[in-house]
Length: 230
Length: 241
Image 1 (spheres, rainbow over the protein chains, first blue to last red):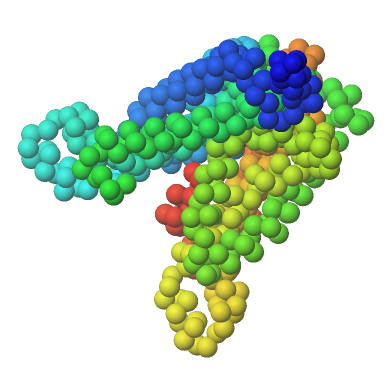
Image 2 (image 1 turned 135 degrees about the vertical axis):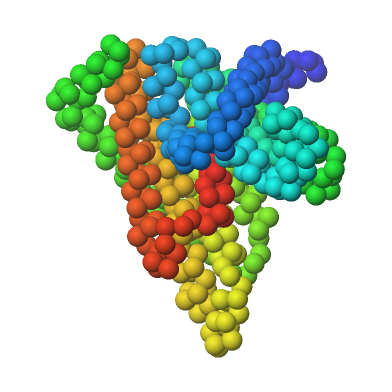
């Protein structure tokens, strides 16, 4: 008697098309996990590649005075391009693939990352640089062992902004079939499935906040001399 | 480069510039909806942001709104509203609501910071001259805050134009519709033509707003062409979509 009463109630949230539905969570767990993993991969790859591209661009902008406004202007202008248009314009080059989404997200991350890396490096006091040079630091050692560590708090704050935006923007990648949790949102729209849409949306925001927290903690651990300040 | 000629040929075809799903109609939908959203957003956010800056309160609120807006995917909000019961559901009300929601944070944050960063000496001087609190806000703080307020309007406009494009994925009209239909028919020239049109509109809005931003600054001659460090910093605060 108890099972017969329990089964319809458990299934009913699916039948009623309820927003919150534990039955959906349990029956589609693997689908949800796959989407979260895909979303995480797209985001992490995009931000890491974005940072690797932003660093040389920022160094170039710092080294060659004339290029500074060009690099900053171009990377800042990228944010003006609507994501749906950007992913579409990449289509002839990279097709309906995850690469299309990652390339687009890397371009967006540059808007924030180039500026923050540059700001961070320019914030290093000139006396510190002089002292390091006086101690015999070569230019590359000066960069890696003095300037970048000192720029780290600013760079980490930029990485946090870039990461949170990237998690949200990844959903639009569903237009080329690679939107991570966005694919579930789109599927839920087409099949009028509220639990799928709400669950994927909430997971997406949770993922953004979780990655933000991870970077916040990592930043504090990496910069022990500023603990309690940043 | 075949894809480029295909897109150009699509744009050159007169048939695509007529009727209910022609480019002018789509452009009108896109601009109309975006303008309405930014307008409503301004009415809601600017008085609140200016007032919060004036009383120097609610900084955490303004910042948290901005951060949260960055974490929430515009696409998810559009779909959630589309599946919500009346007065939402598939239609203009849902799209407009979503657009306003994403216009508010940059407007709020920039208006707040704009007033907050007004030189305290100027405010003190105005008080000393006997101006009341509301006179200080209207005659001193507001004019000095105009560059940042307008920066917020520009960020909101760019954000809204981008989000209105995504709305086409859900149900909305606008230029995004051309892209989405191109995807549906696997018509690459059409979807690229749509993407170029959206790009052109976004750049036109950005350029136009920048011009407006310079024009309406009551102190532009005194300021010259220099931009404050705070203004540059805030430019990255807008999310993109």
